[in-house]
Image (tube, rainbow, N blue to C red; front, side, top):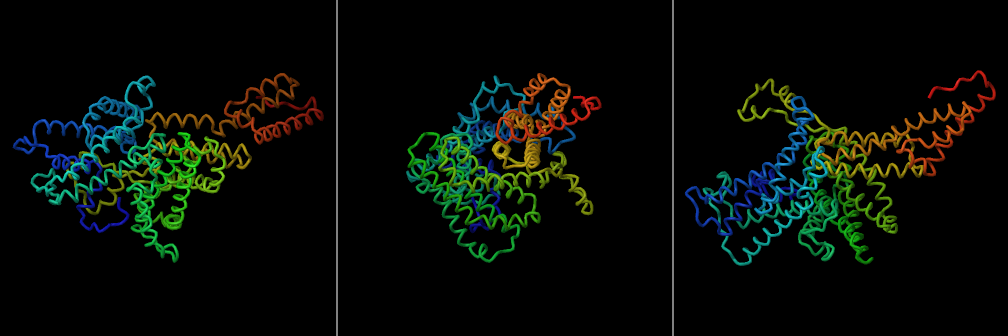
Length: 566
């Protein structure tokens, strides 16, 4: 977790943060060394049993990475793979990892924890039956086991440190990658372990907010966030950033891409604090805690939101004004930050509303409206801005094909594909959650006559477009998309207009019985709207004007008027 360089000038040190799997591999290796394992080493440095175990662990992790990323295959190979082929690949990889999960659980290490995290983030394939879905270990359980493994490994490492185990430098000859410098384990090992632990904290916090699980790494409801070292560090870093950027907010600043990434990185760290505070509110409400505990958790969340607004809001607005001058990677980071921050607020307030705590909801009424607007604008940003996906065939990469310098630019364009940011979002389930909350908000505003029909239709159309860009191999994505299409205003209005025409024809034909029958046959998606005050008023008003018009025409020209054909 770095907001700036933090004094890290060595490019090799910075490169360690590129691959989380590489971090886990290094940490596992060092854990074996400091535990004094490998006493009976072969000439190659490891026992045959250790070599085989490492091979199995690496294979499981590789399969999990493939299963996690397979849903985006159409973005890279759109012309080579059919939809059915992609579905077959996704299902095959998912089933392979699922069969291996018990073995992964029984091989506790950092790579196994990462494997479990990745499988938990891998969606259930759309064609998998409910019976098969229930016949295995669920994703939520994988997260809990992975977190428990991280806790156990950290406790073991702390125990070794407490017992005064000698920590010595590892020579470059014994490292898996001889290019890494022989740095002391006390610095490099603990530094890498801290980065992995922070990644696990992210999984833990996200799971507790979105899946309603109890946090394992950070039980803040009982201890309080301010008592936990990780969150104290986050607050300290945010306070330091706030002080150092005071002049930026007061006097304004030209936002370069480097500064934008610095702002986004710091805000992303505090965003996780907001997620944690929101999760504590949900936990307090879910467990029926006393009102004092609920109020403390809610006040913590409000303070976190206020701190975000005070420190980052103006700077992020400045980034937004310059965002089109930045690279696709910076755009994706900005999009993810805004999406996740506003989603956390809306998820928390949705739980508050379900719990019937309207007193708490009223205090954040303006914040809720702002979050809904920001989240919807973020979806529009994700639809209209693009990410460049490399399309270089694997064979060419392996053989190092070199292109002529004069053809480099044209070749670069041919070897990449532009896709909307939403299509490449690494957390599509968060987009799904955001769409569901916003869809509910549109229906609420429409019911209360706060929203024009044309605006509501446009908003729902935008959200449907977002769902269509998400990986369709996911069962949850397809389910929510089908639900959204079924309740889409345009479809309901088309059916309603058709039935109004039939009602009009029935009235002119003098068959009131048919009118009563047809009135009961309006589409199911329209029934809830017509049942509301505003919907009923608008529908009956439209129907009344049609009836009066037809009645006047019928009286003035009973023989000459021809009713429309339904």
